[in-house]
Image (cartoon, rainbow, N blue to C red):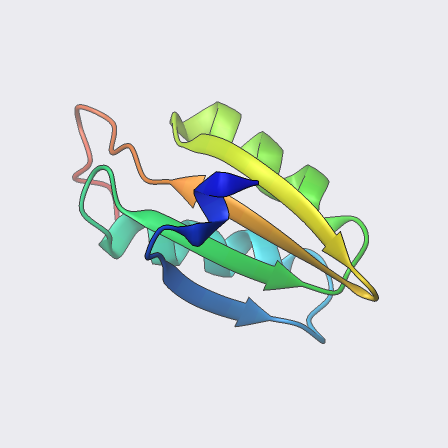
Length: 87
């Protein structure tokens, strides 16, 4: 769990239901520089699965997932694809 201690951008998506957490995570990752850490907090139990799939599809690193009571904290590393001109 040492990676969670590094400075990361924070994105609190608690209270939102699928598909919003994955969509908002994708939007946040698009604005970050490659290598930037993003810590996402979600309360929807299906959101970690959607976000993991998003990372696999777009080439971002899904580093950690930690359940803390009713929320899950996910740590990602932004890795922009070669052709990141998408809107």
